[in-house]
Image 1 (cartoon, rainbow, N blue to C red):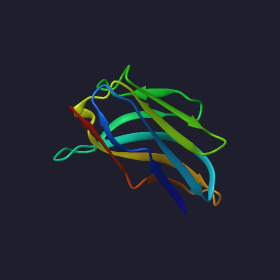
Image 2 (cartoon, rainbow, N blue to C red):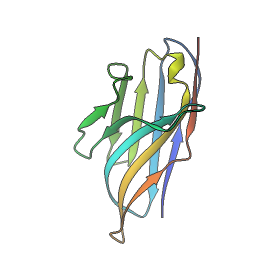
Image 3 (cartoon, rainbow, N blue to C red):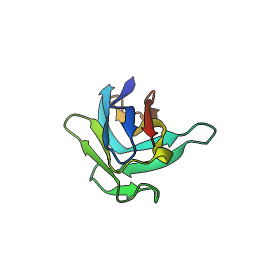
Image 4 (cartoon, helix red, strand yellow):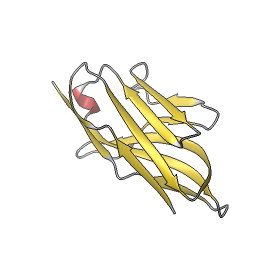
Amino acid sequence: QVQLVESGGGLVQAGGSQRLSCAASGSIFSINIMGWYRQAPGKSRELVSTITSASNTHYADSVKGRFTISRDNAKNTLYLQMDSLKPEDTAVYYCYAQVTTQQLSAGSYWGQGTQVTVSS
């Protein structure tokens, strides 16, 4: 079994910064793509950013230039540095990972989510 646990959410003022972390644990052989999604109240879940095992990154247009995704493959940990935060960034942020387990079974896993609230 694989678990993803996010941390680092909370309340921040507009223009401020926040860093999210996501630690993957369990029966992990390798992790391919990792990413962050978010879901604001009344809206569907949307992609924020992804990163491959080779550190190739992709960002949604809405966060490009403000957010930076990174990962520590040795620690199976994903990060999202969020700068110049806006009230519209308020959402529950979810960590995502494509994992191959020690049993060589491939699957997609999600964290439980962490709330980020940006006040104006």
